[in-house]
Length: 489
Ligand SMILES: C[S@@+](CC[C@H](N)C(=O)[O-])C[C@H]1O[C@@H](n2cnc3c(N)ncnc32)[C@H](O)[C@@H]1O
Image 1: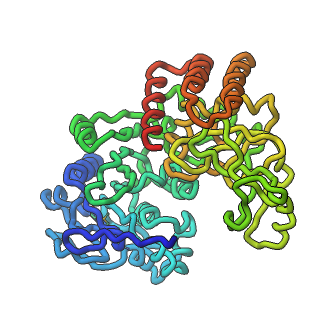
Image 2: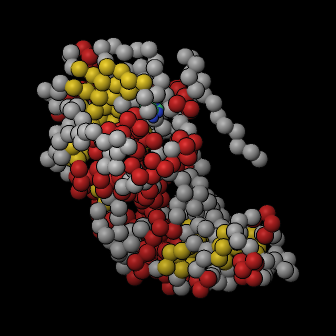
Image 3: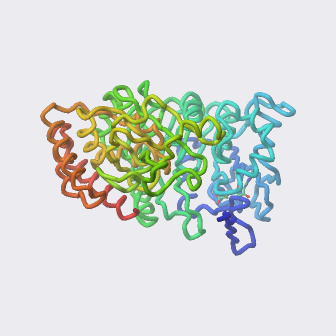
């Protein structure tokens, strides 16, 4: 079935998806502009590179601070600003980039840069149309999203001391693709504030984006970071802002920086759980791999075993736990097919047919099922190990703790690759606890049921909490997180 392009027309006739126009709620704009001014009280010049209807600027204008703005659309609202109708990324490339189209300046003269860059717009089209120059101008961080290119450009052009206040998609906090952007950000700025916004912040404008507020200071001295975990609703967010209920944490308390990490920001993670990231990771002890992509499941897979399709194929346990039957059966001659069909790919051949644990790749909840011997697997993450480890790992991977580590800390978007699974902390756990967890997992598996294992999971949770001395507060948080997650399945 073809994908239909969604069009969201605002009351002023603008296609929001096309142009990425979403209006920042007044209380958020006020909070962000006040925070920037609190850090740079003597600011004289402010830039908003994608100003829309100047929603972020009233406080600056009221204080008589000079404001410069850009937007690809002229919304006709220009308070007292100097407005230029232009593509800001092109302006940046021609004025400030390392390899500028026509170089002229190194830094902008603004004391504050404030922005809610476009997202949800047709970045795929935009990137395709402008691929050549975007590729060279944004080589350092990659050409992934409009908002990430805006972020990089703004940090790069800001003068030392400039305060940068942004409302951006929260995917940059932990997504692998944005590792270079995070590295650039941390190298060049102090992080002053990170607040996760409630998911309903732009819902009334039909935008289903998970956003956060970030305040940075170019070449600033890193002190405590003000941090706010995601409030449940806009009302809670207003309250949190009004009461200034931010935690003050050191940067190292909110950043994953070991050799296995890529500077992921972990917001709202209790300290006893954060400490688990100093353990070894699953990938240091076990092979964590993907397998076969057929390129055309309909053509190559059979739902039932037949004489010429008899190779069990596991491709994504999704919401199933402990046990799942094969998702399909591969042709017996699949290795021959690979040689003839360009899009039929068999990775990690030597690990196929070995036993282990198969993890979900898509779906809201993270879960794992046993991968039996003599089976194959798809592009989901699979941990290859013998029975000694497989049973307890199966139990561990289905615990609330791992569900939270994967969905709440390491990854905020949907696809869980083998790279992510290999970075799950491998908690140090006593042999007797391993055995107990393994027994529970084995009984759940032998029931041949894929759902309804709440009691088993609770038993596993208790063993893990005791072993790792997880505080009652954290246990409660894990429970609430898991229940919320399950509601979304
Ligand atoms: C999320 S809206 C923010 C509007 C307003 N600043 C606010 O915070 O409410 C993003 C704005 O970026 C503009 N925009 C999209 N692509 C742009 C580009 N390449 N250069 C400058 N502005 C752009 C859109 O027209 C839209 O007004």
